[in-house]
Length: 315
Image 1 (cartoon, rainbow, N blue to C red):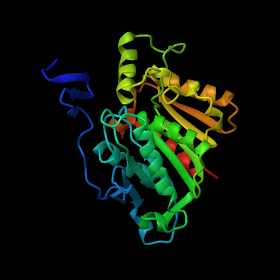
Image 2 (cartoon, rainbow, N blue to C red):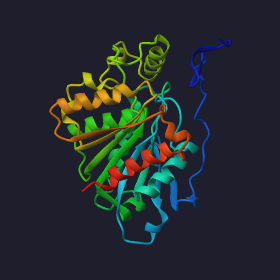
Image 3 (cartoon, one colour):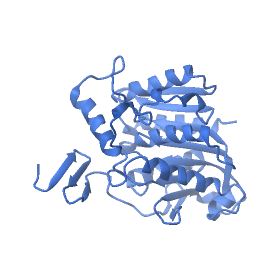
Image 4 (cartoon, one colour):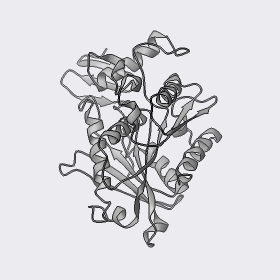
């Protein structure tokens, strides 16, 4: 290990003894734009008075000169609560396509990241973002694009990996603290980052793989509970039956060693007393968040088609 390095989480992170944090992936950024390919306009904005929380907002340009109102998708990026941002090219390009395909407005949330800002900071920032979105329900919020074109009676939450974990935890909070002015029509969890201290049946027992998840979580949320923290292991949360939505779509990938947690979430949620509908869609032959890194492959196109269908089928 290099002199001066306190610890590493390869290939994601290096932290130095002087407190400096070096993120080793997901550091590239791209400015907002009018994307010529999709016709989607984006811009960055601060959503808290101290600018600690920000977002990238996406609207189909064709809507701007109309009186149409579109469903709103609040999106939470992945990256173990450590890497990537709403400004990452990976997410910017993905959101442009998703917004165009689903014909929605998207709010891609920039929450603060560990280890400088350990959990629950990312959850608190995400809740701040949801409250900010809800503040536009009377059409007098701080962002004109939402005042003019958002239908907050059709709000969706979506995210991948750690972002899917945030989606779950925001849904739990929405079950406890309903936000006036919004109606959550459904949530989408893509390759959700859930885990537990004990392996599930068929789940990997390889120490290296399990240790990677455990170390990642302990960096994001230093705790003596470990991976049975209800924030990471929803089956340990007695509030699960009160999940604040009626429709859940979970996307898993056959080669992803986290996939068993997605299936298990469906099973436990279905038996919890929650009265909604939950569906799992499995993609054969693919690994964790493959759709972000190979977005034009057939399986990625099919995964997006399922998500778009879930959004558009809402009655």
